[in-house]
Amino acid sequence: MHGKASIPGAKKGFSLPQVPKILVYLVGFIPAVWLFYAGITDQLGADPMRYLEQALGLWALRFLIATLTITPLRQLVSINLLRYRRALGLLTFYYALLHLVTYTVLDQGLDFAAIGADIVKRPYITIGMATFVILVPLALTSNNAAIRRLGGQAWAKLHRLVYVAAIGAALHFLLVVKSWPMEPMVYAAIVVILLGYRLVRSLGRAPAPRRRPA
Ligand code: HEM
Image (cartoon, rainbow, N blue to C red):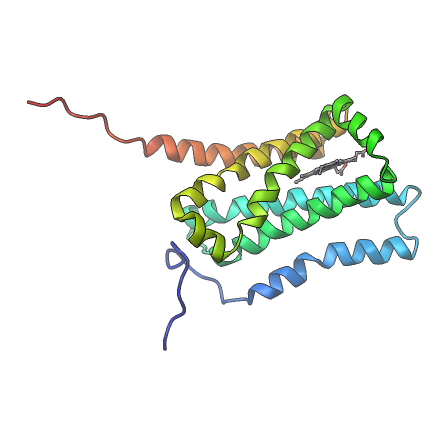
């Protein structure tokens, strides 16, 4: 059988039976479709706008975490889901965009002066916006043409910004709730573990010191 062109590293590890990528998008959008349906049929509780805003933000963070889990899964337990990473990353962006639209349109009624004041006054909005701004170039370059245009190395360097986005998203969630409830702390801990794992691995791979010439 003739194999398709593979993405780097795709052969490493154990591949689960191949699910078409489109299925990842279809399943990934189920929460958004359900939220939309629940919204128009009045099932989102006493404050539907807030519920929608929070749920979309939470799904964005979940997909971001899922994206960051692909590499350790492959390296630690040889489960190779690399071909779905782009879909998970783009789902992160789409949910973050829907979250932003809910905030700007439903929460703030497109009052840009109020939005500007919020960005300046509320650190969690500042961080949320900064995180979204980081996600934009990552989403725009999540296609084969962009990888070819930028070159693999520059592309990989740019996409390391996902780590900054993960810190931003976790911090944003921690700051939304002014007390210290469990949920944002659990998400923050997962982000710390996923980034800490990469840091430890990259430190372990530090180049050996140069030998002095004889
Ligand atoms: C685009 C800029 C963003 C704005 C303006 C924004 C704004 C907000 C607002 C107003 C809330 C609700 C606060 C409340 O409950 O009173 C919220 C919650 C949240 N946002 Fe964002 N956000 C942004 C970006 C992001 C991004 C990029 C992520 C994740 C990738 C994210 C994840 C969350 C999470 C997890 C919550 C808390 C959900 C919960 O309470 O269960 N946000 N955000």
